[in-house]
Image (tube, rainbow, N blue to C red; front, side, top):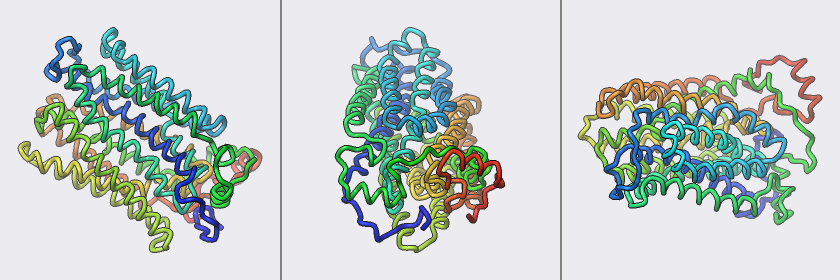
Length: 472
């Protein structure tokens, strides 16, 4: 039986078991990590505008390089991701995340004093170090799913784990707006996020385990269910990574190109939209935080629905796995493209309709949970964390380039026509993502994934053709 087919004869574990606890911990990890990452897009408005708080002792700065500061997180984030997935595979996800998030918490708490002492360059250094330390967050999701998520539950559990990032944005936008406008000022937003990180660390240390075989309190029924579903062995041999075959795989190329296009478009919502809401739609800091969070609230809710629908469609064989993924990818890319094109041509005074389009943008994007998000596991259950790391490293180029491109094109943040250029470029990238996945994507486990030991990996790379057959 293929690994991505579902064996309904296996006795299912408890409906709420240890596997759900592990994925919930990743949900909370994403919540904290993205709260740390994206609160800065609101905080930097307050850091450079002395009218946002009633407390005159809160420092503000005359920085002209705000978008460079926003981009700096990804300077440290881009390189270590691929290596982080390999390190997790070798030394365990639990241990690596303890180190990673400890560093993040310390830097987050020290950011206000660093920015005040060393200015924007100190802020950039803190953000780059945080990016370096957070390089393992996304690979951790796929590492946990590959060890804990049975195929029949994969889309839903993947949506659960990944949606923590959205909830982090939903909560952090209004909370950061409130904290920045309070007498505590913008520094309190960094202390708040640091405290969240410390609380997550305590839960992770107590409750997490790398595999079902490492967990002390898992039931035998649930352990057997997970192991049988995933063909796990308690003492599985080391699986060498078939780098050549991965990097020349057409289905993996399709996923990477599609993810790149989506990341470009999503960056507009995550990083730049608060500035657009402030300068074009004229919302103050409090309202900005609320309005900025609404699209992600829609994405958060619909992500579970799309994940559940995808699982149901696949389980009941309404569509093949590959067709289902391509349909959901199309929804998650064409829909946002239409919204951004529409937003480009709305007049500045159409504030309500603009907000509706922003919400629809992320509503369509939620179909990602039934599409690209699970495609890594579809084509390579054994190396999905490494695949995700490679793709995310490539997509980090978007995280760096988009803010810098906005810095170059949007020289006057109150000029609507300059923002129109940014939105149209993003819409084109979404369409590019659609084409890439529809023509190159696959729902089949690839031949190079079936490697049981290092020798097999070496022999396979030496004797087989490096180009992956999409239909295998």
